[in-house]
Each structure stands twice: as structure tokens, then as C-alpha cells.
Length: 245
Image 1 (tube, rainbow, N blue to C red):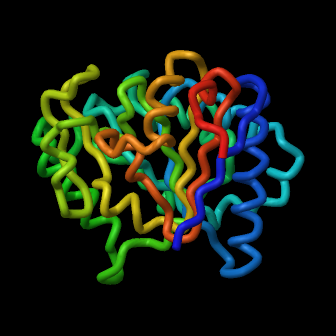
Image 2: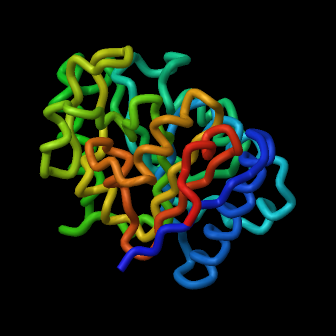
């Protein structure tokens, strides 16, 4: 059974440093065990801060970056290099400074990619990439998620039809948050990760974080769980409505 752990840092900067340190250790441990690590990245302001912090972290020097497999939990379906794409933000914050193996960096397709503006075809392409060389999904060591003000994770929004998708990936249309078209891992795929980390900072996340952790199952964030462990990594304001255990 998955264990849920809530870790609260006093502020966003300390939270970013905490998450970056945890991520470095998780990667190092996975590589010591198997020779590689598989990480699913997320977008948003706190995610960018985590990656930027990891770049200067001493423990990062112990990571064998060419043997890190990188995936994304969701992506805004925009042209390659668009500043609003999660990939673009991750590259600017950290990835472009690392000796990564390009074949192990699995960005979600862009709207000017091989499938053009067909988001459903692009989502299907990413689903095929996930299972290349085998019938099973990768063993995600850590799958990181931001938590939206409305309790959404990845591009899975409360009450949205995409929540019912049972495939590996899906296209999200008419998203309540711009841009309207996105690509996302589905909830069943998210739930295959060894550890799911939900990272949230700021008073705008207080209500959704508190509701999800206090049992509101209408929120997608309440269903994002890892197979072995689920970590809620929060700053003080985001955790203000979390009931004491």
C-alpha cells in the first residue's frame, strides 16, 4: 500500500531546495541500484525553481546525467521553443546545462511537430514512445506534479472528460486554463510511478491542497498516488489548510 507523507517547508525557496535535494538523492540511489533513473518532470513556477536549484546543488555532481531518463507529465500543445511549454522552461532552468543523452530526453510533441496541430495523434505518438522496446511503461522512479488552484494535476482538470481516459496518454481540449489544448499522462499512468511527488507553494494553492489532503475526492490531486510512496512537498502557505494528523 502506498504511504503518504506531507513535508512542509517554511517558504518557497526552502521548498525548492528541499525538493531538489530529495530528487538528487533519489536519482543517485536509483542509479546505484540499476545504473539508471527515470524521472517525470512537471511545469510551473515552483518546478522551474526546483530545477534551477538542482543545477547548483553539490549532490548533483554525483548524478550520472547521461543515464537519466526524462519524461514529462503534461505539455502545453504549442510550437517547439514556445516559452510557455514545460520543456522550454525545463531546458532554460537546468537541462541545457547538463550532459544529457538526447535519446533519453522525451519531450512531448509540439504543435509544429510531425503530427501538426493534431493533438490526439501527438498524444498517441507519446504513448508509443513510452512503451518503445517493450509492452510495459517505464519504471518511473519519481513523477513530479504541480497542484493547480482548482486541484488539477498534469492536464487533468476537475470534472473534465479526460479524467475518464484509461489509455496511457490523452489530449486535453477546452482546458479551463490556457492554452486550451494540451497533452497529458492519464491518471492510470501517473499511478504506475514508484513515487509521486505533489509540489505546491503559495497561498493560491492553500484551498486545493487542503481539500485534496483532507479527503475531497472530486479533485484530481487526491487521486495522484505512487505505488510505494506519495509525497506532498509544500511550503507553509500552501499547507495552511491541511488538517493535522
